[in-house]
Length: 313
Length: 130
Ligand SMILES: Nc1nc2c(ncn2[C@@H]2O[C@H](COP(=O)(O)OP(=O)(O)OP(=O)(O)O)[C@@H](O)[C@H]2O)c(=O)[nH]1
Ligand SMILES: [Mg+2]
Image (cartoon, rainbow over all chains, first blue to last red; front, side, top):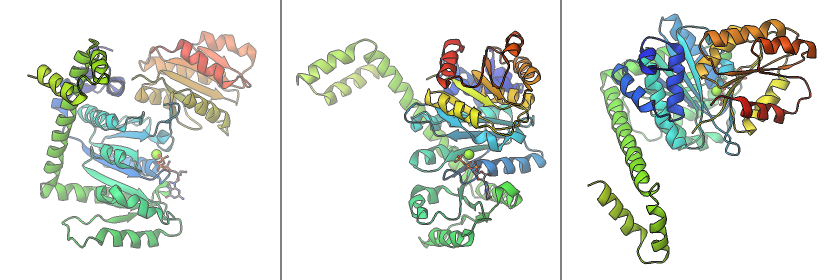
């Protein structure tokens, strides 16, 4: 397809899909697409949805998206599932919970596999969000399984992050403490039809107040039964409250500035890395260096400094 | 880093999707990214999901006998929506005598019950446009 960026801006859904593929597969035209779309970004509100496998993240996202649609807002959804470390393949199964949104012209859902390198995924996710933003989506959801630091990085693309938990996780709550508690602006206990929702809420409350610091936003704890559409409106209202809160106290600007800074640094790192590799690896210089380094005629530190000094002056 | 991306879909009113899930897992194990959408999808839903996901392959399975109508309907919608190169394949309980018409309608290959999943993998690798 020609003129992908222009077509995205005209509202062409196939172009939106092709733009995300270009980003995901690092096609040559990806940078050009992003350059053309960037001026049209900054309008969407980005919601991160994370939590343990099977917590009901996709079911919740489906219902929340429908609530936004009732309010007349357009919705983009990026649903990320883990790739198999063995085959590199993945089963991307989030859409199964969102089938009734597929034919809504105000909704666009895209699934992505983590493909091993989570580091690379966070900037690809951020770019996919930007493409949906430029396309004109008002609200963009990013769903990821929240189990580790890498997923936490992906969620940094979000303005407001919801952590989804379920009753009966027992001591697991200790395991999720690290990292996950810090990123939640809102905690939602889904599957509140199961035993233990109140107990989990009590534990969470305790943990959130543990540090004794009085914050200007204390993450609220919501309860939902996503598959029965219970508690959904309240979550949307709470998203709205958090949005308003961080808009008024300047945090939204701070978060977005921080994000832009990090994106710029990541991009620089990757561009400089690519440039140096092209000069060092492709020319065969690396092999020559390795030979002399192995012979202990010089050392990797001296040589790396020399290369950077020579190439970047 | 390119990956072959496949939509595995069940058009029509079939009551179970065990076979489709077996195929989905085999495709994953072959290194493909498999978008699975579950039971009872209309041709419109399948084609639209294929576009949003920008898949390279649409793999459908039908047990109910509705393939003469549903398979070609999906092919037409997928092409109409502009996914010109997507490879579209079908499987399920399909009489030999129906296969020529399905191929005529744009189904690249038809896999009948008992086909080893490796054959599907090989067919996709050989024919996908990537
Ligand atoms: N009982 C009950 N089941 C629910 C609820 N919400 C979702 N489910 C079911 O929980 C299962 C998992 O839901 P998903 O929405 O796929 O969960 P997920 O967190 O997106 O799962 P992954 O993406 O695989 O990590 C499905 O069978 C849902 O129908 C709920 O509130 N109560
Ligand atoms: Mg999910």
